Length: 319
Image 1 (cartoon, rainbow, N blue to C red):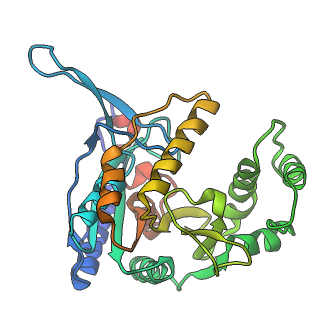
Image 2: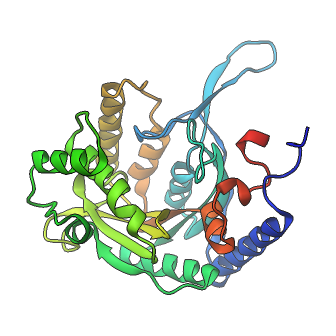
């Protein structure tokens, strides 16, 4: 049996350690506080596209057993810290997503997440660009709107085209034969036709308002109201996803409910909603922007690795 050995080379692990040290110095120089939040939660992620690992907490004696979840992101507890007055914070932690394994995915992976008070998404893009270009030694990222990329790569006006237009393009270009809602076609076309072509560092912003997730919807980033969020791509790989954060507790609760309805419509079980996050927003989440960045993918780019298991000590098949 040889699978006791690490999936990453020792040189790759040394490079990973240097990058983590560089990240820590980056935030220390900016006075951003490093924090550590729980991996286990009584609530779960609301995003219908993400499936958490469910665990059973069974106390001695067998009484009071309950289900808990390994977090898919430290976002919710970090926002509770922000509402409690922590100031700007960052965290590097393990996160867990069920069903995700492949060349760029491992069910357990490392996420770098940070929040900057009184930043909007444009200011946070500046900081993400500074960190990534510093680690990779690459040029600064191009900044381009979501709609501009559809115009450039697919000759589609996403503000004017019909659902039927998108479906036609999706079937023609991606070979998809089923039915999808509008955002489903947009996501399919973006992931299959646009994302792989983004070789040079590219910051994409002004996503459709329907894809706001936990971001605000703002005027001014494009010709229609759009989600105040961005994604960073390097060599055709998504590296980071950032938001100008939603602070409205009532709207947050409404979006949680909409996510639950979508989960049920997809045939996916509804999950417990994080009422503590809603309470934190009610108490007052300060204006801020936040971003999650895949640390393993950053290391992959830095060392030229082709698979995620080449930059983590033991990939899923050796865990």
